[in-house]
Image (tube, rainbow, N blue to C red; front, side):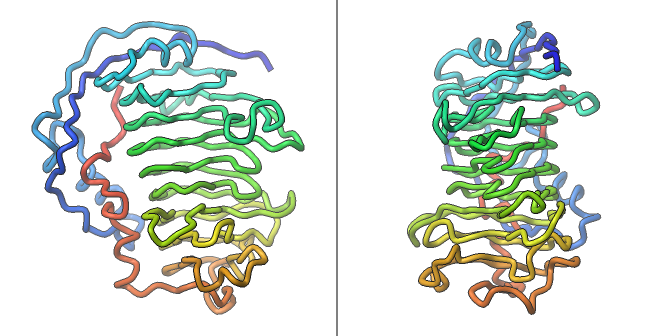
Amino acid sequence: MATKVALLGVTLIAILISMTTVSSDDATPIPADPAQLEAWFNENIKPLPARQGLNDTLLAAENTPKMVKTVTEAVNSVPADNKQRVIIDIGPGIYKEKITVERNKPFITFYGAPGNVPTLSFDGTAAKYGTVYSTTLQVDAPFFTAANLIIEVFIKLILYMFGFESFCDMATFYNVRFLGFQDTLCDDRGRHFFKDCYIEGTVDFIFGSGKSIYLNTELYAKADEGMTVIAAHARSSQAEDTGFSFVHCKVTGKGSGAMLGRAWTEMPKVVFAYTTMSEVVDPAGWSNNNHPDRDAKVYFAEYKSSGAGGGAPTRAPFTKQLSDEEVKIFISLGFIEGSTWVLPPPKV
């Protein structure tokens, strides 16, 4: 397949960020009725000019776009220790690049047009680049945002590879499709917010030690291709304030026997709330990864799961069905302190 490279518009938006703690309500729960999600989002995650509770030094100013040909070139054009919001407006097409957003380049947004979503693709393997660095897109910088993108592994090989890796804090993802197999998305080291996304894969296709909310996101398990686990959270001690919270998500796929999560490490924390699950999910739901000594240490929990795969009576005995009180922290922005940093996707 020929690679289509369109011009990219890089729009600089100067946003001066103060790290001062802000007063805002992190406790408003995500509603039980999915029809109310957008109203909740619009009320609690307002655009910058209308936002209450954010620091007064948050200012925005738009500059003239620059034009480049590759995503990498656009990222490289951002100065080190950048303090401006830089929107990289990615035109339609397939961009076959290995892209890294370095730690010293915060406040970058990758934006694709909703009606003509661009694809970021790379065929790196763990054998060539190492497990951690075989990714299509690696983000190390804080305050990263992605909207309306496809991030994929170009070809399936026996040596596994993955599409996205986050070592950053305070990152947001809107309408992003993560396409892959084993280890599709490395959600590591920081707080992240995913909304209206699609993530597919086989073994541990969401993994890492991040602290993240996945809202209204489809999780597609390729269980017809062998062992399949959605979440492999890497928490290993009580001192780690991390975990994955899936809220109003859909678990779909092919085949059967997919696990919601497994005890990849000693103390993973994964919660599914208000999630619809198809028959692709194994009746037991969760795996101790053949480590019964971890049964008392894992935090695997559900709240009001539904669908053919959402059967609480058949769940593994080391899992929890949360009460209304217990679930509160996992279904509000407070789980990721999101009221201080989560903003809606830009309008370009």
